[in-house]
Figure 1 (cartoon, rainbow, N blue to C red):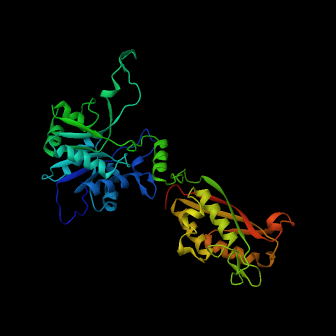
Figure 2: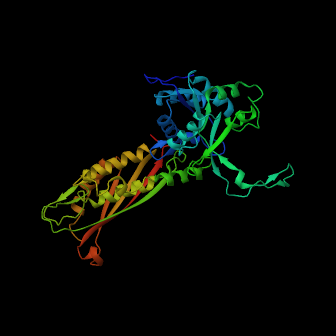
Figure 3: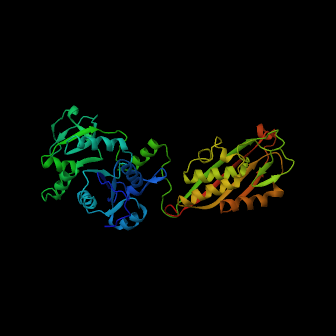
Length: 400
């Protein structure tokens, strides 16, 4: 067992066991370590449990226990067993003896709320041996025999799809796991079933439809939509190549104090561009292409024009920040090519300087070329400047 530093004032009334020791055979990877927004599935499940309980025991694969103990320093980390029941038993052994209520939660349900913990704990405090969250079954359910013949159609009104966290009176859960007849029974699919088999009282409290278990990659994509985050697309095999396209356009302004900045170069006497930052169109297009290739959103997400921090910002610094995000997500930048469309000024005399500035910011080769709009449209009428960019990135096999 790998123990982390514990809280100084340990109340040890309600504890949670967060079970994340599976290999993710159906998912295709250890899903508990997948990213969900800006944290891992396991981290989110543990964080919510910690807000609702006095202590948390985290059960992880044996080969990850040492690393997770160093990472989850506010919790107790233990190595799991060959089955879910064995993993819960390992977690139970680490729960202090004076705990009154113990919650067991699957790490693969990262959207369970603190309020759901409170509901199951309250039901146990009111006298139940165990409490489980459940949601109504909306589909018709058929019971079949070994030959797949229907033998019964249960009334949906009497059925509930059960979730976690499940709460237990601590002595009841400990006794159930100490029962040798239940230790390895394949018919026991959750801890509540063990309590039922021993004649304990298990009650169902309202569950949460959003408390969906992540079993397949589509479930993780769905969880991202619930949180408004971007799915973690940045984990293909090392050497995989992605291409992103970027675009930016800014209108000229009559403000004489606005300097024209392109590729980090200032063009004295040229009409400046309107924008929240310095309106460096080539830098913005390059950053946009990199974000798109890595699946990390867009410039407006990272640098909204409603945020005063970015007022007048140096776009080369923004490009450098984007490049860091791309590398942190597990990508190596190959190159970026930028095409700038404008009538004035002429870019050729400053092109090498622009390429040097942009390449230094991106930490990778950036090429620049200019085109005229030949008098066509708003760009041809000298109303603004636009840029298109293409970025190539290669996977390093995982986040940096």
